Structure formats: C-alpha cells, structure tokens
Image 1 (cartoon, helix red, strand yellow):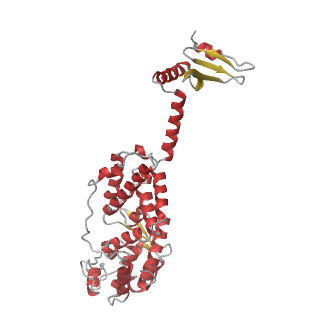
Image 2: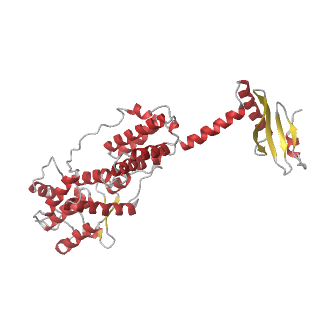
Image 3: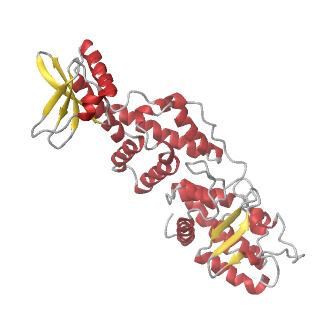
Length: 396
C-alpha cells in the first residue's frame, strides 16, 4: 500500500530504526533521533542494493517517487543507479579540478623547467591578465569557441593584436596538453585560425630592442639643446605619455612630494595618474628653477607662454641622427609597452592602465584612474631603474 503525506509527516521515532514502505522499492527509514530518510531497494546483477534519495522534509514524497522512477528507468536500460550516481559525482569533481586555469598552470609549471625565467613569467602574466579573469574557472571541456574568441577580442579592442595572437597560441598549447592527459577531447583554439586581426607593423616607429634603447638613452643624455627640450627628452621614456600630453604638461599638475603627475588624457578625456620614479622627479626638480615660474613645464623657446612645438622632440631626435623610420615621439610608448611586457614581465592590464588605454574589468566596468596604482608605482620605478641599467651597460 502506498504511503500518504500524512503518514510520512506523522511518523514518530522509536528506540530503533524502522521502515515505512511505499511502492516499487521506495521506503522511508525513521531513525531513533527522528531522522526520516528516503531509500530505494533494488537488485542489480543478482545483488540487492540500496540507493539514498535524500531526507524528509527537504525531499518530499512526490520528489522521492520521481527519483525512484528515474532510478528504475536506469535499471530498465541495464544501468546501476548507484554506480551512475558515483560516476556523476566523479565527473563533477573532475570538472572542478580540470578548469582552464588549473590545467594552464599545470602546463606552465612543466614548461617553466625548460623556458627562461623571464619568458616563463611573461607567459603566465599574459594568461593571468587576459584569460583567467574571464574563463579561467570554467571546466576546459565546457569552454566554447565563441567564449574563447570573445576573450581574445577583448585584447584586440585595446589594440594589442600581437598579444592576442600570443595568448591564442598559449591557449592552444593548454588545450593540446589537456587532450594528452585525457582531460579534453578537442582543441577549439585551432578552429580560430584566421579569426584574429593580423599583426601589422606600426606606422609610429619605435626602438624596442634593449641594447638599442641603451644607446638611445646615452645619446639623449649627451644632447645639447635648450634646457626644456633636454628635460623633455629625458622624461619622455620615463613617463611614456602621448607626445601632446608631455609637451603641454603644466607645473600645477605635478605633485612632486607625492611623486604623481595628474592630468586629463587628451585622447579619451579621462583623468589619469602617472607615478613618478625618483629619476623623473630629479629631472623636474632640476628644470623647475628654469621654467617653474611659468605655466608650462616645457615652454616654447620663442614663445615661453605657450608649450613647446609639436616638432621639438622630433627635431631633437633627427639632430641626434635618429631616423624617422627608427624612432618617433610616440615611440617611447611602444618601447615601454614592449619591454615592460616581454623583458620585465609586468601584467598586460597594468601596462595598459599606465598607457591610459581603456581597460575593462571582468564585470564590464571601466577601471578608474587609481586602479592598480600601487602596482603601477612599483612598475614605474622598476622601469626607470631598468633604463638606467641599459644606459650604463649593466645589462643588454
């Protein structure tokens, strides 16, 4: 005889376990402590077995019967319900362990044994900055082609086409690694071949080879021009702002005790902070007695009430015999972006923040001007120290 909801509800504990039977193997086991546990008795391969279906009242009579019927459907197809549940739990646990991030870190750890330290750091930084925040926690078998492409598109949207290709290649290697371990069946990254924007050479020339950068810095130190142009040339690689932002810099925007330069980005009309390394502060302090009484840090030679001309930095570079196809005023930005990423291993999102590019967080929000400011301060000082080492020949 089938159980009723009233019988289940009114079942009282006894001094030992007892059972109230429903139909088709389903029963309610009542414990001395008052627990009411649903169980299914069934036979498989000639053996009697039990399957736990949950506790009342969390699992009501109707739900318990539905679970029983599901189990009986499995039996009809010669599947052991108990073994099936165990396999599902194992699969679920494996999915949690086999996330893209966990497998990528495992792959990276193995590769790090044969990679150089700086290359190893760079690869991990690219994944941590561009992949993990968005799809790192997803089981690798559940990531779709569209999801991966969307993440790579985010990188392209900030103009980092070469980085997008490198991240794509890293992801492809992670998928191949997962396949080799039997934790994935398909490398979806291979299907994205040709989907990314091709990498083209920039029209704004830049010196990005460390040894050549060291030579350029020596030439800048030896340049004989007006104090303002000399200072602007020395400051340009240290702050790597847009040329127009450098030449129109105003003294009131600098807080030297706090080692900060605050201004509105000309291209995006957003507030920005440039942390100043000790080397940058020294340049400004040496220039202040000369131009500090005026509005502009780098005033024009003929019209001191106006900023220096667009061509002042370019003309200085040409006088040093740096050709236009080798280095431009904008090239200091490309120099910093490339070396900070590839040589010093800083996270791409930190670099993009300092370049005053629009960076979106995993929730689709634009970061504000103070985002990652402590990390950016560390990066800017490390960058200045690195340039000093290049200039002195301590490293190549």
